[in-house]
Image 1: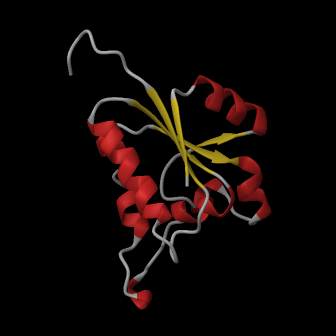
Image 2: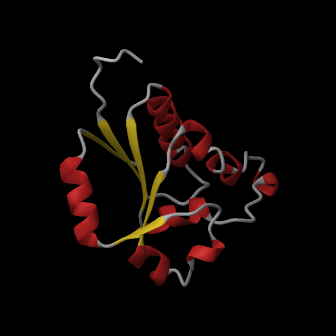
Length: 124
């Protein structure tokens, strides 16, 4: 990357369950592409989006690619800031131990601050 280039902060919000629409794959693809260009990426999972991070996924029965396999590559792309809405986990009776990767649990105030600091937000 050009030394004089300014990094932008991108936040991707995943709100959809992992299967049934193309939104989760689209969000992941956009986040990975952004990271390739060495931009700062925040990947926030809210609502049903937390299901994208569940370990033990197997989409073979619905003739689809297992999204969880791709989520495990986030760190390879330098996406270290993976955030999960604490309330979304709680409402779905899930714990951090059931997730594929280490995450940071966030509260509404944290999310609001993140969105205000972000140069660009994609909400899928």
